[in-house]
Length: 348
Image (cartoon, rainbow, N blue to C red; front, side):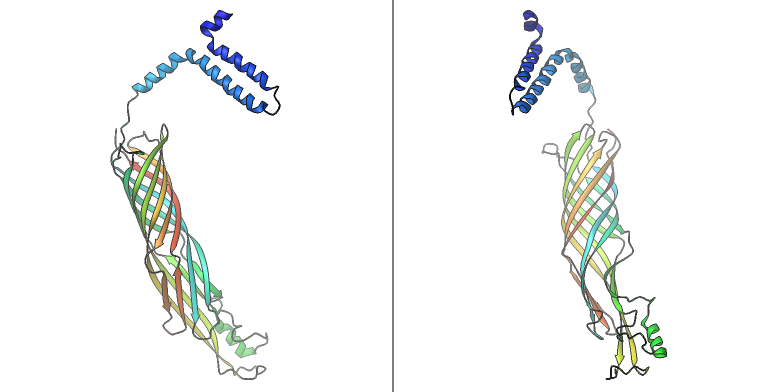
């Protein structure tokens, strides 16, 4: 038996020694879990050593086959097209000033409207710098974005809708008097102010950066792509204010006859702004089936941090002097998105 251990059972000797270590560990109170884990690892190592010679020829054969597999050359210039989406919060402070009878239907509101944009773009990667860590490539990107929502209210006070016009209540008052005891003229329905914003199609974006490649599996490649970003957006604002004023109100609050005269004032205005933003971006792209030719498919996600470099404030007023409107955008915008990229890598 001793000769058997000496000639061919180095692994068995380690196994027996590990078994004794396990038995000793079970007699030691609080140290038992750690010693048992160590013994288990030693046992696995011993089994691996014992099984190694038995499978050496098989592993060697597999290595020979792998060494004989043809090398797949890395492509040079890589043009791509991509489709995806981008989402962000459009943060604004909107102020409405009523020149007719302030402070009614006036004030400042802060609003954050979530936007979802469809993106269609392209990318061009340069050949890799093979001698540098991460095999970096330079790249340029650009494309267009299209809104998925028609418009968003960014300011609303009262109920300034065409379905509830104050003229209806005023005519009823002239016929019947103020039987409801409303506080007139503020009680007439259909008064108020609102402002909405609508992104104009298309918006544009562009980026330049560096792509670093990290192989994470035999057929998967992770690309880390910091960049400098530019964005152009054109936004249309439209505002309106409806308010009712009384001419020569009677001094006696109990005097309630149709001799009271009310006038409806309507003001509306619109403006368009062009927002230019620059900042930093970071994209993570997962290249699928990197050996596949001539088409390569990637999934990507990204974040962009953009500072508004054009004017932040847009002010516009009703031409009849009823009201003025001001929209102020946040200086920093944070956007995120993702999509699918299809690249042409040529034939090997």
